[in-house]
Length: 440
Ligand code: GDP
Image 1 (cartoon, protein in one colour):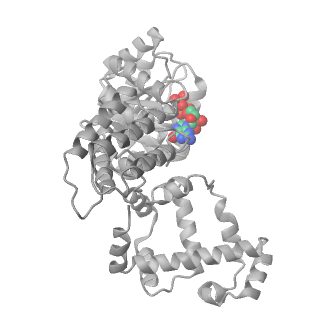
Image 2: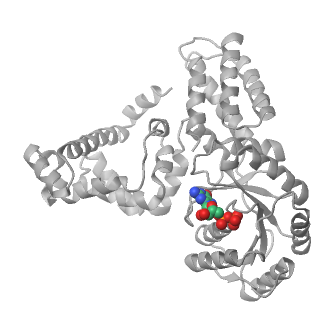
Image 3: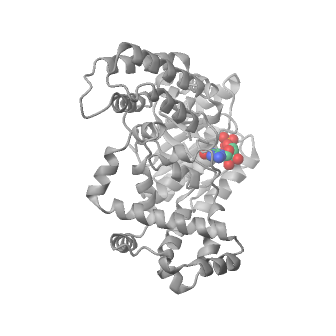
């Protein structure tokens, strides 16, 4: 996500690295590079210009303290300004009524139906809600079918009426059913529509007027960049939606939509879609996204995802082992299984400070673990518990047994050793503080 932008911003900062002070000249040069980076990421021109003007003003007004470098200071200013640009505070959904009615709108293929399912799953599993889905795409029977399948998968009821071609009455029937069955949230999926299709735009305005929804979420494909922003503007003029959902941020998006949408329509991004699966949905946190863009990682999200998957008792045990330097291949194997449950690998890696950048050209897919798992499985119980015992002849045997080669086994053991060293360091506060000091 956003690797290119992160990379270019990093290069822009280099202008200031090694400089003792912030001057009009070196800031102007840096801002030129930052603006270029933003434009390359498909950020709208006006937004990019206003943004760099702001950052420049803030940077020039600052005294550089002796404890931080101009580069660090600029990173801090950029972090604050990027956060602001993407909306500042996290915008939560509101649930002012029972049932709360949420209307989903957007273009065909934006990811509406997928998001409808993801949102229901999120509300059910993370917020303890009892949602009902309403299949309001009367033009495509396949879309209704798709929603039913998703509902089944996540265990959420779906109301559909194949006989009717009237989205308003379907939505009303859905709300009535929710009241009857005690569902406290109703999520209404609608047909995709083009903003230039006047009849379709009038129809969704009518659905809005009839339903009086508490939230209207506009779903848009982040890969479409500036188009996403323009479409958002047209939809917002007609619907006055309450929030944006950016989908497909796991893909090769340049990030422009995420950065420009708030400043163009003045509506917050509420969720981001990061994959096709039902759990690939994140609440959008502008501050965390800013820090990811700046290559500072997003440790908070990483920890949250981990918390959703990890067993606390097990984690405490593990910490104890790490502190005693007893972390072994059984633990390593266990950790891989946990990580696999947490979602898309490359995405996770990107959340670790510094790692996203280092990994940007490396293809990580979930099969990446296959040979590691095979190698560990070919170790004897003794070897797993005593990693230091794995000598040359054992390595040869393990390579053969796992169908890999010696180089691969050597690499894994080296990585494992390095990891143990880092873990040991991290469990020592003094060493950790030292490491932080060396961060750019
Ligand atoms: P709709 O026409 O707006 O209802 O769009 P769909 O929900 O049918 O999604 C269109 C395609 O995009 C499907 O193939 C989805 O699996 C895919 N999709 C939706 N959201 C995401 C996402 O966040 N990431 C990725 N990679 N694919 C997505």
